[in-house]
Image (cartoon, rainbow, N blue to C red; front, side, top):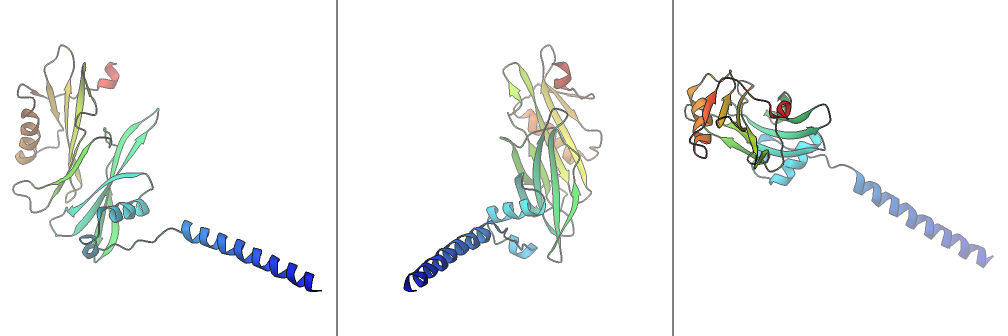
Length: 216
């Protein structure tokens, strides 16, 4: 009889250990529901905001920026995702605005040419703007010894518009800069041209864009 009691006790102990193990595993796997408001975002570190963007947008968010992107002084979070397939490639940026501390996804860009690898993302304040613009620069990622290109964007979240500047260098053509036709403000035009002229003073602003992929 005592041996049966001992066996029963051992079985109960093993069951308790196994149950405890799986309970702990489930607790580890449970996603953390992050709560971020406009006020708290100023006080928490970038990694928490990054995890928050992944939770609200997608797990493959690669970079973020947080700031005041509209003239009503509301704060927002921009998250970037990269897409790569045989049919299409590029990036999409998503904008989460905090309205009365409630997060709302209010804008996303179309698929834009570029990569989030080795790129520059930052907030930018231009003259005559009382809010920040979002700036993307592919830097040297698409440049090579035989030519290449640089994709840059300014995104005005206040008017939900994307401005585009494309620098490209190909054999037998001058160093060229194409500006998207929706650039009507001189501040944006001057920013793009002066930004590239610092490194490429001989560049020519052209009226027609160039697709290097189609020329290969």
